[in-house]
Image 1 (tube, helix red, strand yellow):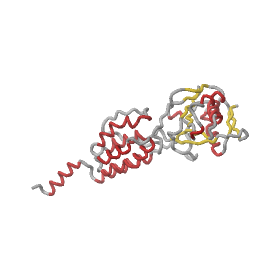
Image 2 (cartoon, rainbow, N blue to C red):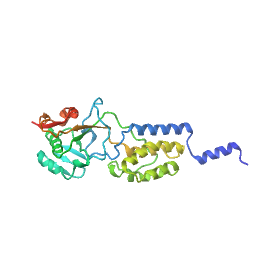
Image 3 (cartoon, rainbow, N blue to C red):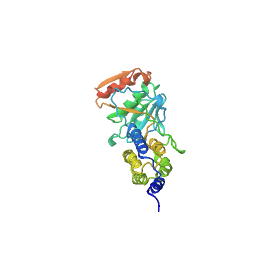
Image 4 (cartoon, helix red, strand yellow):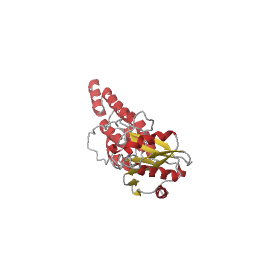
Length: 285
């Protein structure tokens, strides 16, 4: 007959779970990391390095969500590009507005998100802003970055073959690792199975709200640092974003902001941010 002490030791070995205090610390660390990551940026990746994007002071009001519903356009010194192709070289507002027609539909309620490289001359930014207005958009989003860092990912316990640039297919990239860490945590496996086919926004929201609880429920049988690294990969943007929505006027008689045509974005972006309170026409002089 097995003694009570031996039975308890045997049960602990079978459980293969962490002591409650250690596990709770891991759960809280995972939850703290998840909550410190801005919500809604799961599909957000850039064609330009973060350091080439203007910093926005924390005192300036802005949302920290880059919505996946809104198409991102990159404004460089030589032109304006979508993720897939350049569609505007240094050209007129009228031509730029015409090129926007197949890419932006004012009727669907989506806004353009402009990611402007710091050394871009104002005339290129002004072209993009005025082309969006001419296309019929009522507002446009300007993407900046905050100095607040994104929390780093934990170091996984085993190598994860993840491609950082594949934001649009991160669920597929992370599937193998998630399967491994869920093998000993049925609650995590159930969560992943229940959300696997959800649209991206719902998938991420459910993962954020449920992952720490599943780790606690299975007493940290899922490898906490590796799980944390996978969750970070799935939901963390490349930097802490700040999105300022600038209204675009329909009335030509509204206020006009004229700036030097060749002034770099690094010198004029705050002047444009100031127009967030009032629809403004933009001019390059």
